Image 1 (cartoon, rainbow, N blue to C red):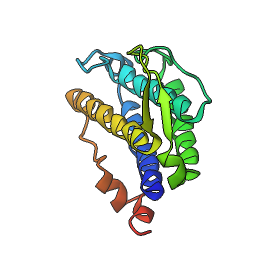
Image 2: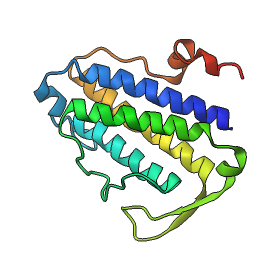
Image 3: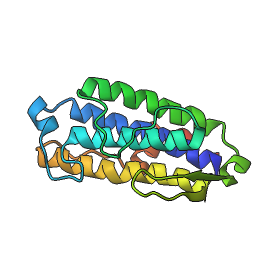
Image 4: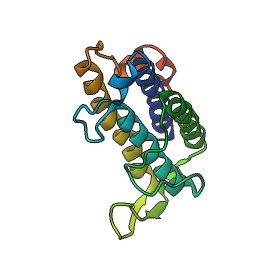
Length: 171
């Protein structure tokens, strides 16, 4: 399983790069326009993904910043958000690379910011949630971009595996 997680961590960075490159083609008002997504604009949705990943990495590793709400607005510009995303994607890749089966089977206990109760889960399935959550909101970002008239992005995992991610096809 660790190799699959390494693939997902690298795919995650690749797909985020596609989104940020597409976001850079928008006018400022388009980038910040409320398009009806859960977090409104493309900027706020991308910011939420950074917030949520920071929360999970803090829970997983015990280090790093811990925003207090899922809707925290940490970055005001695409440039500062992009830099944070790149640092966080690399942190995820580096951390996943050192995980083994024993680490993935250990329980983690955390308290969601949305509920005043503790939950305990094995690390492995909880880490899958981090990647699935990214995919969920990247879909919203994709919908925002196409609603703004931008071309559809090919960010499915298979496109990664056919191109930059070919090393993950064979173990």
